[in-house]
Image 1: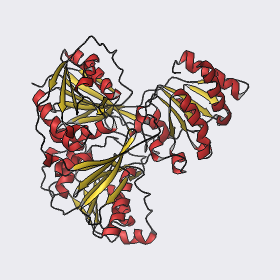
Image 2: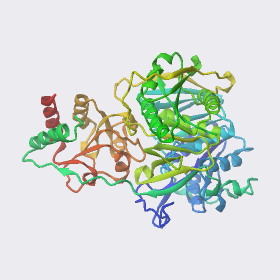
Image 3: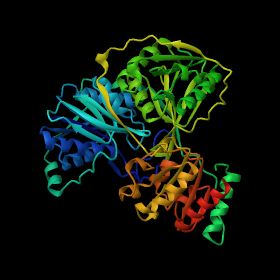
Image 4: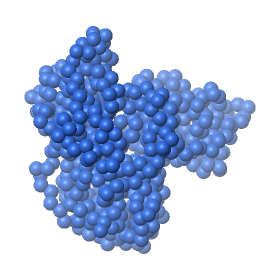
Length: 264
Length: 327
């Protein structure tokens, strides 16, 4: 079973976000970059399926050179090879642009399954994976917490929680799955794994290598355009509730929620 | 020339979901500032009668796509039908709800139409005749104001519980239209083979009006009992911080925060939650925030409208008793 995992490098979730001078992007100077947490579940699931069915796991990242580090992490976990799509013309591309570059990379590679994270924790949109499936003409199964691949490796059932219920979805392969927390517990890269990863193939590709026209990418070609980024709205200072005892404080809180906030 | 606003409504088991009315209400406001009309589209099986209510919230026209294969949502069938209906109606703006279904449908539909789509927005406006969408990014650590570039329809999803509902007017009746479309079985590559219903009867956190949430301060899984009791009394859903979920005290689906659910209830009661940046990111659009924590320096108090510095194991049961008295 040949599996592709697309990964994105994002600021660690501890990061304080600072908006840059031009108000169109964020300050990147103090950021610790990590593999998007939801993509890690995809990498782990791909490795488990490979262990069961054999085949190869290919990692595809898109972005500047620093993304290599996250691809190496996935290789150290056990993936076989990596591809980095790195082209300055991609800077500022929207989801459609990113998915187009990924699709061009994947077309022609034989594969049974593709994993992406259900969303990236930077732009929180969850669009690229689904768009990639559309461009490749394959079904997608979104926000999945459990996968059961049939013994013959030709179809699978996936569990998708939605509000108040879990849908069990069946599909034939190839298909694309977007991974949700709960799918598995990702392994840590072992020291021998890290050593081995250094020797694994990691290819870099530009848009020209993919036969794509750079003018169709980047800010200029984006359908969605950033007017500005702003800090979150400030909340008014709150009240600390006085009282001699927990009971008194609870009584005061109940009164405020009822009479002032009018939420109870 | 693209014109008008389309709101895509959502049904589950034949019942119109609240998010649909939120989306129609917002569509009405945007259409009014453009001086244009609102068309609601709903897909399902036998939902026409219930779909009349979409008119009460502001739809001028309701297009109903009725087919047994549309009873339960699948992206394959829904996108195939909606592509036809959207192209036929040629709207300037296309809005959906950012429910689990809406976010998924919107992403694939935008890809099919080749247009830009702003996901999970908290505010919309019209500037120079065009849609401007505002959405939280980095789980709310920043907000992005977005516009569209040579991209029609201008497409977006609206975060549940954020867009104000119009007052329903049963005197208003929309023009009801049966949609004509083609749907070939060959496009349906995924199939729902089973549905496991959550028996708790609780509203999902993303749509909950009230949430009682617990963190590391709950000490163990047993500690959540008092939160469950308070939640039952006030009709709230129970949430948890990441550390509580990682400790195995609560299931993943209860996690609020940057790697969990982003919630916008009217009331969020945080108990024993210190307020790590990732948690704050997931709940800071809540309307009223209450924090109960022993540690007066806990960052959660910076976000709270009402703070109680004390032992939650004493405050929460006392709060429950007080609220019982008031009821």
